Structures are given as C-alpha cells and as structure tokens.
Length: 220
Image 1 (cartoon, helix red, strand yellow):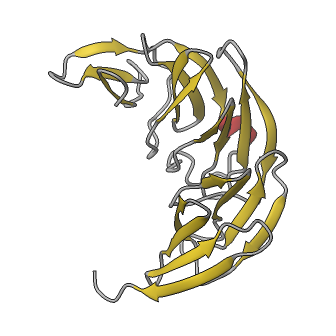
Image 2: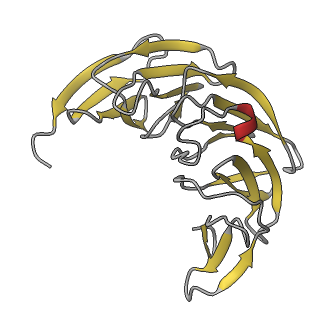
C-alpha cells in the first residue's frame, strides 16, 4: 500500500505493475508491459530525492516504478547478470533498501546484487555482486552496515551468512542447523531455521554467528 494505492505486479503482455484505489478497487494506473512474467516477491517502497519508487523483481528483471503514475523509470535485466537455469522466475526475496542503494538476492545460485540509484531516479548501476549470498526464502536484513541472511546450497539446505554492505565481502558463513528466515530487532537477529523449527536469538555480530539462546517449536 502506498498512499491511496494498492500495488501489485501481475506482469504479462498487457502490463507489468498495476495500482488500484485501496478503497474501491478501481484502476488508477497500469504500467507498460516489459514482456516478463511475475515472480514470488513482494515489492518495496523506496523514497529518494522526493520520488516514491516501487522497487521489485519480476521473473527476469529488477524494476523501479514511479508510484504516482506507473512510469517504469528504470529496469535491469537480472537474468543477463545471473541466470542459473533453475528457479529463474521464483525470486522470492523483497529487495533491501538503504539510502540510494538496493540489494537484490534470490536462491538457486543467483548472485546477490548491489545496485546504486542515480540521483534523478531514472537509472541504476551495479556496485558489486556476490556469489555467497543467494537467499532461497526468508529474506535479508541490514544492521549497522552489514547484511545478514542465509544462502542456498540446495532446496533443503544452506548456511547463515554476513556480507559487508559497501563491498560485498563475506564476513562469515556458519552451518548452524540450516538456512531459514531472519528478522532484525535492534542489535539482535531472530532466526528461524526451516528444517526442525528452531528459533535462534543471535547477536548481530559481523565477525561470527553468535547465538545467545534458542528453543525448538514443538507444535505447529
């Protein structure tokens, strides 16, 4: 939801993104089609230099759309930079925003991608790529200039990682149980490993995966 609009990304041959009036469902705008398919990702709002951009990932592209009128201000062919051959159209991880920079990640051996938005909001450039951070499910968070998440070794397994936001340098990789979901809470991480349902409270420490306490979800 952005202002009075509910925004979603159906893609296809008629449009890419659509904004509906959040009160009555009427169409407020439809963007042009870029001839792509939708992904499993939720879009995110990025506000920079007075422009409200909707940033999202489609089957093959990363796009920035003006929330006011649906104009696609820029698009980047993600598949031309990283096309692992499987899971191409899934791309389930919401882009991570800090300032004028955008971090993109997806599983299936995609590279992680740090983009920098131009001051006029009409283009992006690639700042760095990372073969280490290819998050399958569960998202990524930024704490004090470091990115935390988990990577994809297979559909059923992966490790916890930390990257330097500015350089993409791998700070640590830890195989504590299995990959999973992560959220940030102050200087702590709450990690939920997806195989056995263990909840981990972790210090956001770029040097080591520092588990403070944990428990296992016994029901559900």
